[in-house]
Image (cartoon, rainbow, N blue to C red):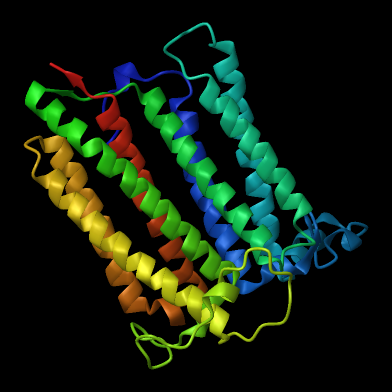
Length: 333
């Protein structure tokens, strides 16, 4: 594989961390789908959608039929997979506790991930009644992304792979480190903007692309659009506040694209095939993301295209984390 190729150096729990990351991506995709299609609104309680428990007196087949015919079946699946993910994280934390005497084995990271996973699960149950509140939905969304990113970092740590490079290459990598860190910060901010656009349903505010409401700079209300303490209230889909959120997200996407393309160019200039390969992968995924957004029409997209856009952003984040981890642990020959 591109990132993992030293099987002999892997530590216990690597495969579990890798599979947990994949499951975290699926959970995140289901969360986005549930929010986009409003299926989460059918759930009045945890694992209780559209009166799901009211049919428990029927036989098992009738119970399954009810859930799969109810509008909230995707949210039930999302909640169940979230519970499975929490169990896997507990397993990773317990495994790290058992191996705590090994200084080379990460201990604090799995424990912190477990803390976040438990907090995320509790927030998911508590926020059922607040599902319409954009602030709660955004916190829940970002929490899932952070857990996924940290699980990927844990998988990288447990893989035990590090780059061996010449003194010149190591020196060049040291120069690139701050720019990779800045790239991660920019991508996280852009993901947060995309999340706010999603939970505010601001994608519907601009029915055209790349212009918005047939204007390059439409009328908008930035103060109301990014008022994070605003109480829940009725707001038109094409309100000036939602237009502001959409436009800022687009500007952020433009800045992110330009910066990541520049970073890819810097990586390709490093005379090391592993660094160059990461540069090619980053550029390819970024290019695919841009083409997909333009082709699908981000502001007119379906639930599927919204999920793909979200997963593409997370994939870019994971690539940058992989690059940062490998560069940070590179050793001189």
